[in-house]
Length: 113
Image 1 (cartoon, one colour):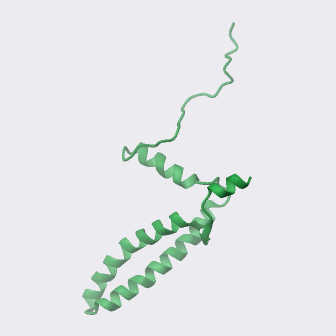
Image 2: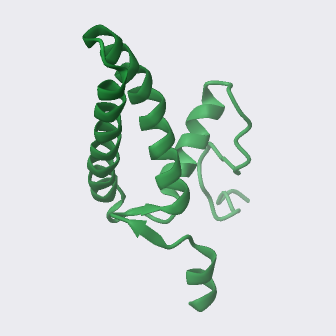
Image 3: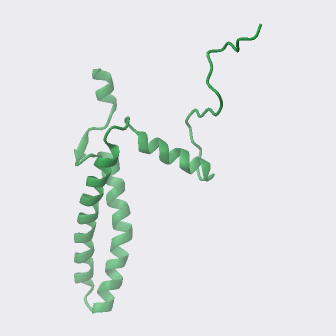
């Protein structure tokens, strides 16, 4: 059991692991900061727009962590990462790297002799 716990990233922020938190911050930043710049230019003060964008990034990451924590409850480790990799593979955007099998499961005997 100790080896299993050592191989997994620890939860550091409301259900986010270190890598999930960094992805959430980057995605929120890429969306919010350009929007904040545009709003700042429209109101004539870019600093206010960027400050507002920073507050929105913090709120989005916190709210996203709460939602993600509820989604992850009861799921195995790395469930959503594997679902994302499979979805990207289906769209042809990346290689899956996971063993996927479609078909009927059997015990290796078909009952016919």
